[in-house]
Length: 225
Image 1 (tube, one colour):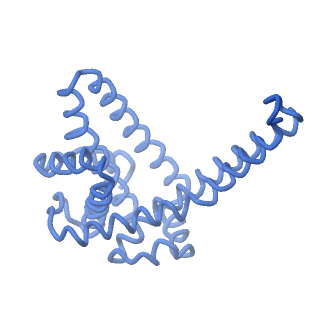
Image 2 (cartoon, one colour; image 1 turned 45 degrees about the vertical axis):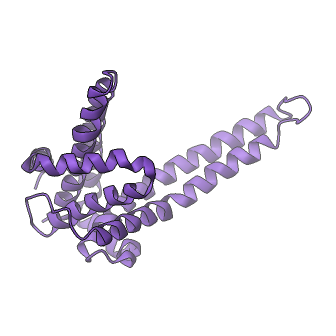
């Protein structure tokens, strides 16, 4: 499928069952309690898994324990891929502030301070972007392999999938789908200005719509055939 077909399909996908979209939205609101957040991630993963398997309808809300575990697995994969960039950035920030005099608050070596801080942040961001690209396919690969956590770290297989898709096509997909998601989220931010009703619409419909749109688009991109 080309990018246009993927986007058109993914845009229509959540509308196949608005009731399930709203249920996902309720879970998103409940995510303030932390644990429901794993159910949100788990359902998004279930939609990804079902789409890779060839199903065009939104999956059911059942087997909640399995859904929770899947969400936990997604969280673990995300943390594992992002931990190194975060450590680099944190180390740079921490190291930079050792150059600030505790007595006066003045930077003792401005050149070194700026170089260390900006250098580590730039390296961390670049690494995060690269690993983020790999992580996205890693999660899809885990879904394809029946939720096997280890599949998300089979780097040779994951890179082979990306190579089959084509790095350029994959990056174009990532940018296009990401921009669409950002635009929809931007619209939702305006709804939040409307007290209560606007926020409810954003959380019950738009935010879950974005998650399902993303996972459907990812499934179709992963199934590069």
